[in-house]
Length: 320
Image 1: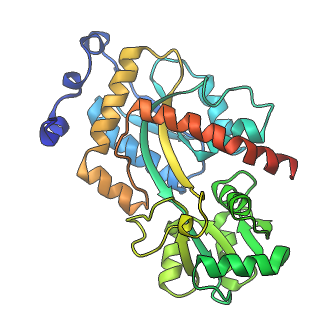
Image 2: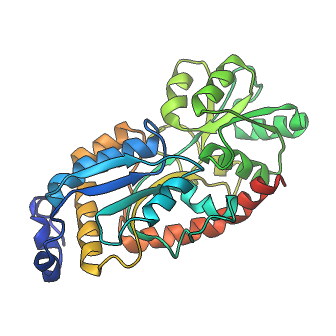
C-alpha cells in the first residue's frame, strides 16, 4: 500500500521513470493556459494548481488567461504552442461543447488534447426567488409545468455551464421556461434576488451565501449525489431521475508530448492533489477533488462528456 506521507515527501524524480531524470524536464518555466476570465472557479482552481505544482516540478508554473468564445480562443491558442510539456491547459466543461457550439472550430476536443489529470469538480445549486411557491424539487416541477414559459431562468452566455444546466433540466424533466441571458452570472443572480428572474442553477460560491441569508431558496444540487460542499441539500436527481451536472477541471497537454513528460506531470498533479493543504484550498474555493485523478480517468471523462453534451450544444446553437 502507498504510504501517503512518503508519497507527499518524495522527490518527483522518485515518482517518475528514469527517462524523466535523463531528459531533465522541466528546466524552465511552464505556462498554464486558463481559457476563462480572472476570478471564476476555473481561474481560481488553475492558480491554486500552479502554486502547488511549482515547488514539486522545481520550476515556476505561470498562469495565463486567454479568454473568449466559451474557452475556444484559449484552446486554439494552446494548440499553437509546442507539444513539449512547457504549456499546460486547464480545461473545464466548456471544452466538451466547443465543437458542438461552433462547428467551424478547427480542433477536435478529444483527439487534439491529451488529458494529464483530473483536478476538481463542483456541483451547481438550483435556487429560486423566495416568492416562488415551491419548497422542494417535486413542488418546483409541478409549478413549472403549470407556469410554462412565463417563468424566467437567469443564465449567462450561450454554452456557459449554467446555461447547460438550465437546458439539461428542460430536457430531462420535460419542463419549460424562458432562458434570459446575462453578460455575467453575477448580474443573473442579482436579478434572481430582485425577483426579475425566478430561478437559476449556478455556482454555490455565489448562491450559498444568499441562501443562508434568506435572499434565495436553495432547493437541490445538480450532481447525481449529494455534496459535502452543501450539506443537507438534496440532489436534483432524487426528483428528476437522470439529471447530473458537475463543472469539472482537468489538466491537458498537446498530443505528441513525450511520454516521460506526461508521466512527470501526471505524477506531479497526483502529488499536489493528495496534499491536505491543497485539498483545503480547493474546498475553500468551492470545489471537491476526485478519488481517481489519473490521466486515464480524465480521458474517460472527457470522451463521455463530449458525447453527452454534443446534442445539447447543437440544440443551443440552432435554437432548437
